[in-house]
Length: 631
Image 1 (cartoon, rainbow, N blue to C red):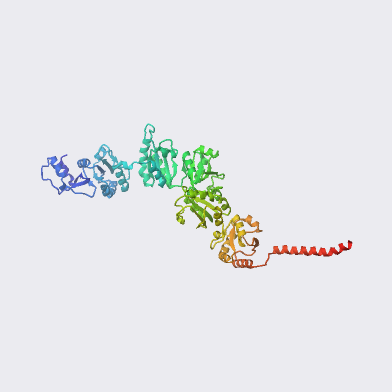
Image 2 (cartoon, helix red, strand yellow):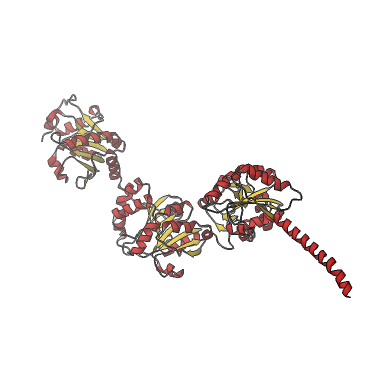
């Protein structure tokens, strides 16, 4: 085809690429020279005087496409039909929306109507988009997505321009360890770069690089590493291996790692759903050693009972997370044997490394959750429990009385004080006071804790700070159990047996409300009595409550709810209506300010004593004369 024909064919503008721009030659530009001299024509075409930028996707013919391919590093070619092709019109409209964005990335767009040429590049149906790098017509890339989604097309073009941007980033050493600790959602591929040692590693890596962009879109970072030491920390001995980390909690992929779509679905499911992470032996050992509260489910693969239990327990995984309790699962039988597990599935709760086996019904998710969160399960004998920030928040909400020791593990003074405080942990528990320790640096900031060591005492979530010597455990215990620390404004304080015994010894006037759980009458009475709590305090009467029916029977209380007034440890039971607060208050006033009044029991004892004395005197005076006469 002659160049003169090229210029006059269909009277369309023609183009070439220069300095990363598509240049348009319009009909009003005329050549005054020899049209048979092709070199002269080409020089004229490339003259700056005849160049004009165009914002639309320019149309070219076959010959001009060859020139553009020769001059442009990155070129996107849209093959289409103007007539009888609705899809072509829609696709063209979408592509023109991203034309400027592509141009900003030095990716140039042209369109062409030439189905024969399209077939030479492997395109057998239009519309179609083909990408060329550096004019390489032997290896074009055909877009296989939706031509009506401009955002995806633009991302695909940018990736094709720089294929390395689609590669999984290499990372190792301290940088990788910091990323594992800080990233919310992270996938790490462990592989061996030596093809002889791991022939499938490179192939697997190539497969997984196809889903790198997909994981990014779902907010999951994806990195790869050849760091053997980090792999060993997580028990990785065979390569390739994939571990997903969610907030530093690892979960190992157990499926076919070369099946990229299955891997992608597993990662998305792990991020979006509450799943129990899978760990191997070394990972499990590491978690047991370093995690304050860890629940481990031991199960068998392709085991119906295990699958049923796993399905149930995944429903409570989110609840345990809220309390800072991690839950993982493992098939490793050696760890199970270590803790005496012989039947599967089995559940063990590790509290600072101390194991406790669950003996209830694993198919009852509510029973399992209640057991995990029960105070008796969480507590360790002769040890102040270590908790993290999340667990501390939950404990402060749940416990009426909670002592919290804030410290640092690298602080020798803190550790010495901790040893002293552990001497009173069990005794504080008898008084109904929970005792925990926290070494997490930011855990106490919200309550104003900015230095360590610090002891905070939470009463109904309100903190008070100990200002004495923490190295004196007896003084600390006296402070924790003192009346000033127990009393709460506008509320009847809850006490334990031990605390009540101490209060009875230290106080002359105490009113005790005995009640029971699941008792509507108790709740109604308690609500009424709390309205006069401040009035009772003005009478200099300590008002407390205790939920202990057995302890109530010790003082003759058989029916709950009940109010008992103690005057110098001597009880008097109120027999009226507890919801009638004025009667209760008047009764307490009467008992508080009496001087010689004795209750019926004491009067009976005295009366019986007096009668006995009179009877003895009567016998003595009656029989004494008779004895004298006989003698």
